[in-house]
Image 1 (tube, rainbow, N blue to C red):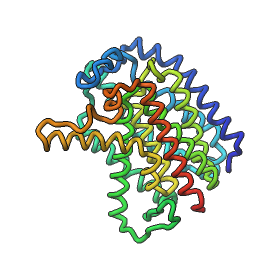
Image 2 (image 1 turned 60 degrees about the vertical axis):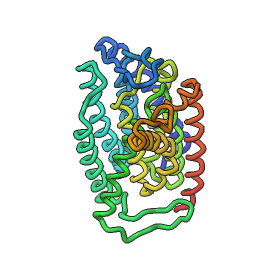
Image 3 (image 1 turned 120 degrees about the vertical axis):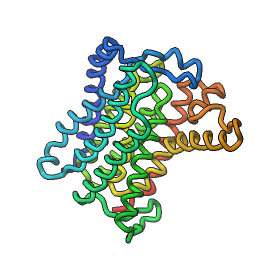
Image 4 (image 1 turned 90 degrees about the vertical axis):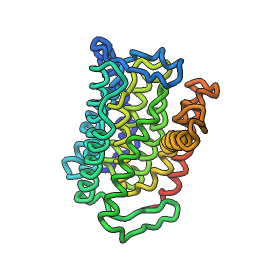
Length: 332
């Protein structure tokens, strides 16, 4: 069942309100449990003032999105359209990995959690499972739709597509995680992405995915009530890995993973800046291209305030999502 514009807006509004209410309940609990964020010493010195700010705040929008999805998407679920639930569960698995990582950091009171190896293996398993699930459910074809050209590149061997999907999914999730380094940045950048998927799935009459996208939008806006500068709470890996799962899950559920190049332009830039910095540092024995990586820290070191970084990066994300929308609008 395709939701109306009123239903889409109502879905976003309910998700927003639920997130705000849950935030009022969750933040005091996190403070009481001393679930504070540990700040890396190698980061900007002025970020040390954020030490102890409650983390794992992503739990508020994770819960709100689920309740909203079930409330407004139950007719689709009853009718056998489980696409939105599949994507949510996929994102939830990544959120659970992040929760374990956050919990270990909180318990040990240091900025380390799961080892990189364990993170990668768990994320890889989740990516493979999601690809198989979407394939068997009929949401995903082992072919690539190319935006703007409105053509599909088919005849891709199953094994090759599986490798591609796993690489993109794990990469996207970690790119969103890297972007979460300034108050309100990751959530603000992802708001236009949620709007993009809500618009395109509504246009293509993919009701359950539209409800999920609208719920994501409302949840992010609700979280920003507490996460805008100066942040009262951080989403933690719990929230950022969940968001990464949502973004790439929606891209694959709509069968157009290549659109992530546009809608995820900020995530990609953040990740590439990190990779380039490390490679150049090693190749030149200590020289740097950026004043600090990832990219948001570079601009901070250039004198940009956190609010300006968030505003500019969110604007870039919005513009890129608008371009992406034009590139895929005529697909069906």
